[in-house]
Image 1 (tube, rainbow, N blue to C red):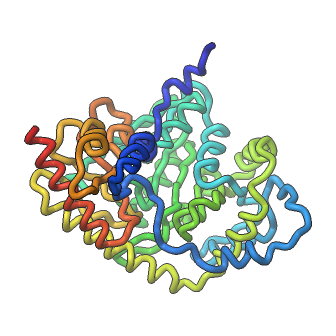
Image 2 (cartoon, one colour; image 1 turned 135 degrees about the horizontal axis):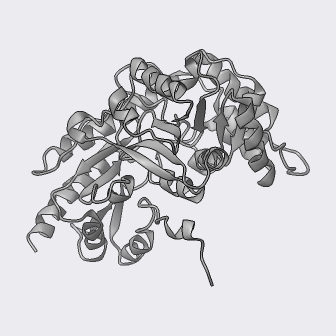
Image 3 (cartoon, helix red, strand yellow; image 1 turned 60 degrees about the vertical axis):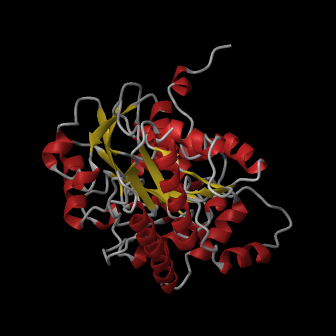
Length: 396
């Protein structure tokens, strides 16, 4: 039986593809430190659970395809707090940020189109773009340059007759890089001048560590037809399992077309929208405490990595990931060895291998993305294990 050629061009998620091996490793009694996935262990705030307890409707009905007013208004209030005025019609709820990406690419892309995205990038972008019949045109970046890409000549060299959108992740996943206001405005200017959409994945907006402003592409006037924002409660409120996000744009033509997808999938879960709305009422001090915790974890991880000879990494400015090069021949082979043949006092490590974070063939083979979403002592132990493992792997 035939399988879609589009699907065959997609790969398994590097964050999840080793899970079957990891399960067998655990069955052998080996403890695994999970640095592979951005699943925070920070407690989901209590208002989420209280809203679930307070839900007392006799029937859990479909929500409107365009979203429950309580959720839309909560999102509007949040954006008002960072200086952005939205109408309900500027927001469509989604099943997490992932569906927001799928909706967006399906709406703006045709077969043969291209999206310009700095690499390394979140690998699921590739899947969503490919299933829309298009492809990623990467802007190469390098750790030695701090993954910098917001340069007019560098960006415009990637734009051609097939380009339909620029894409920025701010703060970056997996790099932790942050665009300055001037750099973001440059990207907006380029998009407008070339009549392109600019898709801004902003799900890590709260996680910046040096006092930078919480930037959104929506904060700049004059780009209303160009800007599409991807947002989510998953990372911001440590509520990944709620699967509630949003696609946000003031481009009414675009939003009218996205509604077709919203109606096709009927609705975002009713109860999760209600519970997620409660999260947006948190005191801003919540984010101060969470940022402090992630900053500690980041500093611990980078310090320990820099103790390993041959590791190349930089201090990320935002999000909660470190992208680094390891002194090994192949990260995939190394990961399989870590799960199948290695342990240090009954413990090992799981990470996300770097090659799928790139569109340029040959890049990322010895790179990994590490998530600092577990506590600092466990991070320190995990990187100590990694150091021992690298020595033993290379000495085989």
